[in-house]
Length: 290
Image 1: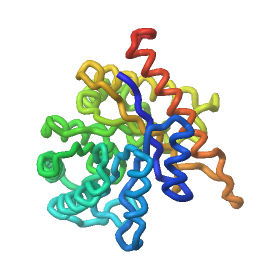
Image 2: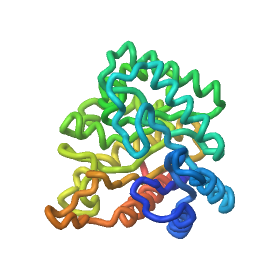
Image 3: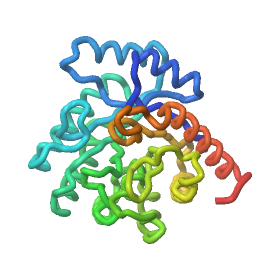
C-alpha cells in the first residue's frame, strides 16, 4: 500500500495550471478542491481543461448548503435541501472526472435522527452517481464531534469517512481519541481518505507542527493516523489518499496589526505530506511497527 499526496486548493493563489505544476514539482499526485463557482464564466472549463491537459488526478470537494468560499452551512436548511445540494454538487463535479467526492455535509444543529436520515441519503447518492462520497469530520457539520459521529457510523454502516481529527480536538478541548479509543477504531473502520492537519485544544491548526512546543500535538495525531492506516491496510486498501490541509481563513495564525502569517502554508503542507507518506510506507512495508 502506498500513500498518494494531494495538494489542497484552499489557500492557493494563482492559476490552476500553476497549482498543478506546484503539486507535481513537490511530488504530489494531484489536487483536492471544489468545482469553481458557476457564476465565474469560463472558469470551470479552464479548471477541467487544466486537469485533463496535465493528466492530473483530482479529489472533488462538495459542501452542502453554502455559498462559494463559505464552509459553515446556512442555518435552518432541511435534510432534503442538504441532499439536493449534495446531489447538484456531485453532478457538477462529475464533469471533471474526479477520483471521488470529499464532502463537508449536513448540519450540526440537527437532532441525531435527522443526521442519520441525511447520511443514509448520502449513501443512496453514492449509488445514484456511481462514485464514492467520503464525509469529512468537520465543525459546523453533523460530524462535528466524535460522539455524534459514533452514533451516525453505527446507524449508517456503509458511510465513508474523511478523517480530519483536528476538529475534534477543538470541540473536546483535549486529545479526545486517547480518551475514547473505541471511537478511533470505529472511525478507522470507515476511513476512506485522510486530511492531515494538526489541531490542539484551542484551535484546529497549530502554528507550525515542527515547533517543539507542539511536539505533543504532532505525536498524538501521528498515533491516531497510524491506527487509521493500519486499519485501512487490514481492510484491503492498496492506496491511501492523503491531503495535507494546513490552511488560511483564520486557521493560519498571523501577527496582530501587521497580519503577517507566522508560517508558509505550502511549505507546511509539503513537509507534513512527505513526512506522513514516508512514515506510512515504512509501517505498511514492515520496516517499522505500528
